[in-house]
Length: 541
Image 1 (cartoon, rainbow, N blue to C red):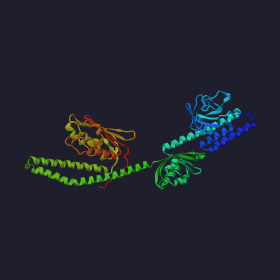
Image 2: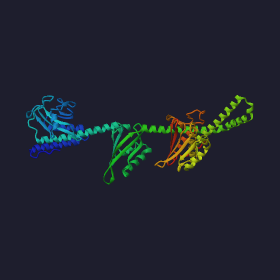
Image 3: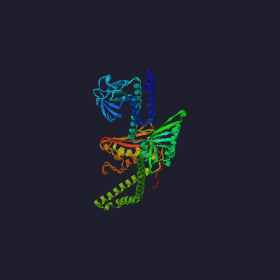
Image 4: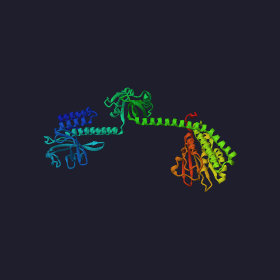
């Protein structure tokens, strides 16, 4: 605040001091109504200096836009745009102290839009450390006495107070814009009074836009769903006592009785002894997100139930089909043994087709049963010696590899946490896949390598130099019954790799494949250090 000259007449000083006190009181009385504050301050200082019109303008480039006017507003009104360069406004912007002008004490203002300004005092307004604009008082009549130093000091005080309210108004505008832009509701809690203030957006979220923004904490909490009330109270208590972050999702009752989901964040200010004084935060309506999550859970549960039912059906059906199929196969073999000499060429072909079809059907049923069992048999997770498992699996393929000059090499010593039966089946299927899809032009080379991850998990790679596959088929080969080749080229049911996928899934891992047509394929199996507990399997068959 400007210090008034001590050498001025006592009456002038008293009047000035009274005016400064009135300006401060006006500023305080207006509170957060910054438009009202600026209007009161501008009118009071205009009346004090006896000039006809007071203006507050924002300056941008060479233009000054009038925001507030007091006095003879028919002359220049809010919204008018006035020039700055080579004008009294420009002079006020360049002067560190209020700039004073009268027609008799200097040249006329060449850019005066009215040509009638005879008395002028103006000062620049600072907002956030920069020049925002100007406040000025003007008159078409020449003031009888020059504006003295005391009056200039009073005007400077008014300019500072007006600048503060302009800055606060802009801050409020930015805050309101941020609130509207974020679509969040904001709340403020006076802990000592247990009193809450809710933003208009928060009231809108709650379906109470016409309700008083001030309420009590207990009244507010009464709208929280009964099942979530303890959760919210505990979150507030932990925040006050242990400085735990206040971040909680809960249901809230709207004015129409419907419940919505709210996510509330908040922080507090504490006084002596760590006692919370005030708390504020935001609230977002997350109902759509929670509804979508619940719909996804419901869909997943329905899908799980449907899959379980389908697998039970496949198990029962496959189990019941085995007996009649064994009879078909057995009687077909007997027919071929005892009556083949009585059949002509066409009869022998038909018999061979029947026996072959029955064999393939039997293999398909066995694979289906194995695939179904893999999801329901209880897992016995324990340390598994992978070196021993691979050696055992390799012995299964000794004959097939010796006939084509192939080999299996591995660097996979150590233990992994897994079910030993499922782990052997996994490796057997991956090695068998490499043997089956070997390139006839070269001996098969199959390599297994195990790496340990930093988190305790393992990464098993099974590579071969077989026929490979195109990269776009990398995901498709793990689907049940999906084949990239005809049964005549490569036998099989299309279940082996799907079974590998299921085994890895049950261990909480991940399997993927990389292929290079004509060069080979690599299968990557990543298993965690600890197999997750997925609950008891569904054994109802």
